[in-house]
Length: 474
Image 1 (cartoon, helix red, strand yellow):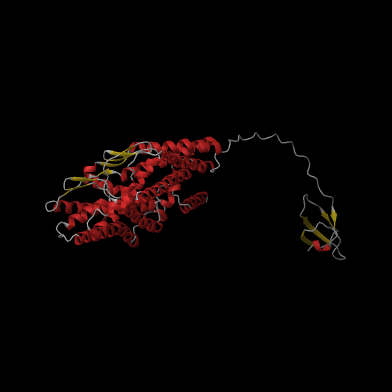
Image 2: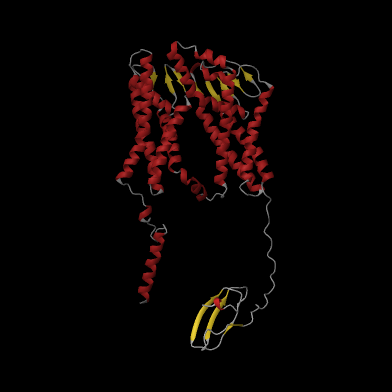
């Protein structure tokens, strides 16, 4: 009998463990959390793998064929141009007519990453476990990799007809995996990133510090966008002259569209200048403290580049990173942390902002033919962003954070005295024979109720403090 009871209790324990989501002693995952590839999930994975690439290929093909039709040129090598354009969306450097084209517009790449992110975010809630979300990220990368290999083959075939050289295969694979993998992972695990961070044994304030760093980059980009718009407005005549350098309305429209596509690149460059770094346009350079003149691409958006010596009021632009650093420090202090911990949170925010800003600067720059390298100084941008935020953010957090309160030692408690009791409470008899009443009075101290002996026994709860009221007993 004892053996049967022991076996029954063991089965109940394993059943409770499986219900809680923890596998039995054998280490096998419960059925609810095992990855299951159903027909519906397989269809969703195929859609994630192919839809963003199909949409982007369609847009690139329409743009290429429309440009060739507007230029009234033949369609020879159109397939190679479409393939090169799709690889350009992945920020893959291209070689056209022996000229290196590494400075590619960021706007189409941002749009493509948004497509991958949205599709992954829609499919992720329909998946039941982490392994299936990994399948989702793998599908989002596998589909574009196949398209990239096809594009490489098309470009190699078209290189004999048009002046287009196949790009480096490893560079193609790296850019495709990086862009699609990061965008898909953000969509698939976006709702669980806090749990993932906490699962690494990091402090509870780490997710809030990461968000503060991301918001700091957002505010910096907003300020840079405002600065670019103001500079283009101040140099409107230069922008107008640049837009009229092309032949005809089609050429002017092409320059305007090209300016819109390169606008994020210019904004990232302006953000680099705001934090005290410098931006190079070939031999020319631009910083808050010095300007070296030189030729710039004849695109209207490049009218935002000043050509004269720096003005004294430019130094006031350094208030932007100062204000952002103070804002990060206040966010970290609002986490109800002590001063030293709030300062550490600000340092984590500075690290996140520096890494994101450095990645954006790398994406926004590149080589452009005879102009050479155009973009910000890569190491300097990250260092400057980190320095501004960790300096003013940590200082603000240390000043605004609460003081560490040491736990007080518990005072010695005196022995408790005897609990006072209420005097006996007599209730009138309910009838001639007498009624025995067991009553509980809701008060600060228990009371004893005594009545005459009787055959009937009534349990009651007396709520009223008036013991003479016969309505208190039922």
